[in-house]
Amino acid sequence: MRKIIVLTLSLMGLSAAAQQHMTPELLWKLGRVSALGISKDGKQIVYKVSTPNVEENKMESKFYVMPVNGGEPKAVEDYKDLLHDKYISSDGKYVLTHKEVKVEKVMGKDYYPELEKSTVMIYNGLDYRHWDTWNEGVHNHVGYAPVNDKDKFTDIMKGEPYDSPQKPFGGEEDYTWSPDGKKIIYVAKKQAGTAYAISTNTDLYEYNLETKATVNLTPNNPGYDTQPAFSPQGDLSWLQMKRDGYEADKNDIIVRHKGVDINLTAGWDGTVDSFYWSEDGKKVYFTAPVDGTKQLFEVNFPGLTKIMISVKQLTDGYWDVNSVVGFSKNNVIVERSDMNHASEIYSYDLKKKEWKQLSHVNDDAYSNITMSKTEKRYVTTTDGKKMLVWVILPPDFDTKKKYPALLYCQGGPQSALSQFYSFRWNFQVMAAQGYIVVAPNRRGMPGHGVEWNEAISKDWGGQVMDDYLSAIDDVAKEPYVDKSRLGAVGASYGGYSVFYLAGNHNGRFKTFIAHDGVFNLQSMYGTTEEVFFTNWDSGGPYWEKDNAAAQKTYSKFNPINYVDKWDTPILIYQGDKDFRVPIGQGQEAFQAAQLRGIKSRFIVFPDENHWVLKPQNGMVWQREFFKWLKETL
Image (cartoon, rainbow, N blue to C red):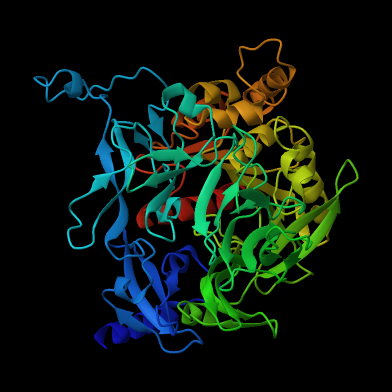
């Protein structure tokens, strides 16, 4: 009971502190909701709320349950006993888990034990670092242990220099029991060193507890095979991409039924984020980007009958359905967000087509805030295509006033620009400070068909840049936009976009902000860790002089080649632990701007990677962002 009172008082304090418009300070007080599942008895939803503690510079998490139909939340200490444990074998004997295991010699002291204080690392191939950590010869390994002796871990990947779960973002979704509890299915990319760095070929492996034998279940697919799950009837299903080296390929749902692999989404012009079987096994529900949002879909499972496979979009609106949690009678339980609201738990009645908000973690915080208005706009591109552009207007927007505008350049480059709610690139906060945000679904975005999604690869500085300029030029025609006060901002590929536009904007923009952006495509190729990405999107290595696509990338599309045209203030953020877009990219850009006499600022986060995760660092990021805009726009 005490924990509920604490939660209530915390929310009351949050409400009292709320201002009329969203601020960075309030953004970093919001609870971040993660649904963990539906209880074994089907009556409760179990979820976690993580709240930033800015003073302590950490996230604090608490766990709650609430009725599946909504109602008063109740704090719980131990939630795991409430949920179905899919990691316990069906006979109840074993628990499935994973742990880090030392496999390879990498450290100097591995080779020379008498030099135990050495910090040397010795590598004979690539994959020597990944995301934000150096490879020290330690790998994630799947294994199992008796339920009554969980320390007795049997490593089913013993001695293998491979990871399952996959690094850096893989988790428990990377492995599962077979329905009979006699086999373990897991995801791994069984390549090492340089071969690992240039490939996306993960496979599903099956380990037999009786024979101790491991079999590759997907040897004929050269791309990603991920998220193994069994249907209620016992059919193995998973997500699959076809092409090796292409991390943003079309993601399809595959079901292995009576020895036949059935692609449920082959004829559908989209890409799947995640999927969930219906309780009767006749349908698969999945989430996917579509038209600048993420929605809930269903596809029927016909088995080997001649019944036609049909994909249906079930929901539609200005929101993102981020994940499916489970089912309660006719209701599907999901997480949902939009550009004005962080993710909360909702139920959607599949028969009545009605929504109901179940969790209300941030309602009090939002209650005194004037919301931004989000408009969907369609702009004709220079090649005659229709492009969706989100336009986020300031609270209390007045058409008779003039506002500065920010062109938001999305990263990825194949990430959906949907109704997401970011705790860094937050459109609500930007609009609340008096800026119109222009967010185009330019070439490369999923949700507009596979052809549109793929059009950005090997064309980073081509049509997509015209898409950006078409979007800002169209919105800038409005009488309420101050054309003399336009800025461009973005991270990762969005940061690349800012660097490229800085030398190719023809005086449109008054200021730029780039976060962990690619500045020099040649040095990027030489220092990034997932080489398959640069091979695919850049067309290959810079030394292949007869490779027309690659040479076009490193000459025509390389931002560093246009620095002589830079004439506009630029703010550059960079994480020192970012191995995806290493710090040299930001350093080169800042040094070029400084030596050219351009007003510029370099903000380095020594303990952050490609993102900014620590609360106080996040606050500095936000304050410097708007400080720069006040100075330059």
